[in-house]
Image: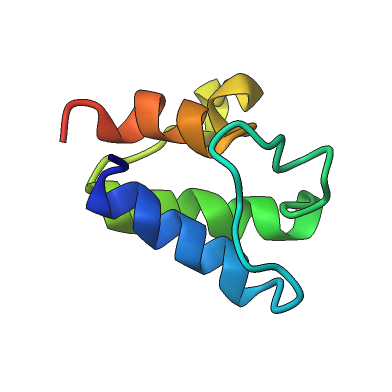
Length: 79
């Protein structure tokens, strides 16, 4: 079962894509254009708000943001 935090991120993504009903845990958010360069910073702030973890923009690993599964592992596993 997904954490409440990752469900908040899923809802955030779906709110920006009303044509979508769901986002699969392993769907690449960048390749599928659910997150683009303009919304990436907003995604980072949404993750920070949902997880309580401050993300250092100087040390971002894009792999941590590619799927809901990778986001959950990187930012919600210890929450």
